[in-house]
Amino acid sequence: MNTFQWIEADKRHLWHPFTAMQDWCAPDHELLVLAGGEGALLCDTEGREYIDGNSSIWTNLHGHRHPKLNAAIRDQLDAVAHTSFLGFTNPPAIQLASELIALAPKPLARVFYSDDGSTAIEVAIKMSVQYWQLKGRPERHRFVAFHHAYHGDTLGASSLGGVGIFHDRFAAHCFPVDRVSNLDELDANPSFKQSVAAVVIEPLIQGVAGMKPWPRGMLAKLRQWCDAHDVLLILDEIMTGFGRTGTMFACEQEGVTPDFLALAKGITGGYLPLAATLVTETIYEAFLGTFEQQKTFYYGHSYCGNQVACAVALANLAIFREESVLEKLQPKIRFLTELLKPLTEIQSVAEVRQCGFIAGIELMQDGKVPFDWRDQVGGQVCLAARQYGLLTRPVRDVVVLMPPYCITNDQLIQSVEAIRKAVIEVCGG
Image (cartoon, rainbow, N blue to C red):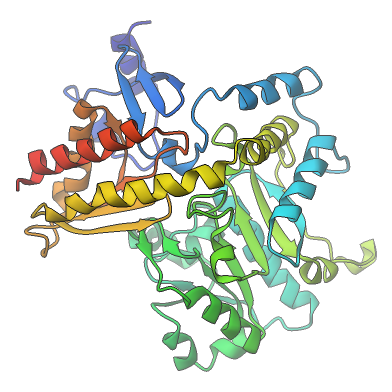
């Protein structure tokens, strides 16, 4: 099949996520059909190359076709691809759990596998509710989340979301959630201290909110509040985990250990779906009992603990050790900081935000007034950046740059220059 035939078949048969399909299927809309990759680069069916500027939706860490990741998958396939994790276990899942616990802040001690970021959060939510039921405190059934948060699209994870477009249509079917903007609002509502099961937050930076960093020290204060009021803390490190903020886990930077740590995206280096919810021994022990006591956590997926996914996740962690990934990332973070500074001189750039190897460039009219959301200015800029060799995706009118760690300095220069040219082309100035 040629590119035209691929596009024609896509428009006839597929339904894409987060996509206005009428616009997608319009006759004049040219689809980009990606067919290959190497390192930080992707190529389409026409042979054009692009820098993967958002790591294939924030998942790819070490680049495409990394030989160690490829080899791990091939080696595991020579043994077995998948067996049930319900009533059985397997070596890759056991070894990965051991290595994750060794890396994670103490006292996290147990690993529950699922499929993706949404389900990692779903696990934490349902465990929280059942934990308090088992502790004889069923009145603790509500959750606190933050305005503009996004924690996934399964129903429980969606309940926590503070972005209306993902949440409002299903609000009548959601878990009970109270939303706050800051820590002061926690103390402003006395009922939180009696009715809340857990507080959920993305540590250091909110992603879908527009790559907005939290004030330094805020996470540590939130942990203190939870401890003082016997409330559980769920950290959503789906995006921030595995080095994105400069440390293996974002919570390390403020010395915080959660009761639940949700991991996905980069856990397999961006190769296969896998998620893990890490919990403390205290949480785990509440679920121990005889069959007749019915304390079991009745939740799971067919592909929990999948061997191929766990094997490539183990190879991902080995790359961190063997290739000194976090150490080599630090100068790239500093170099990115310097590259981003001139963007603030463009009239339509309201703010440039950065947290580790995550950057968001917010666009506004004259740098002050939001664009009409219907104009999709962020989307236009990302589309324009393609002609300069960069693929990325906006969060509304915030252009995101979150490349694989293997990106070269020259490719970083090209990425930021592509954004600069695209912003000027679309917005002027």
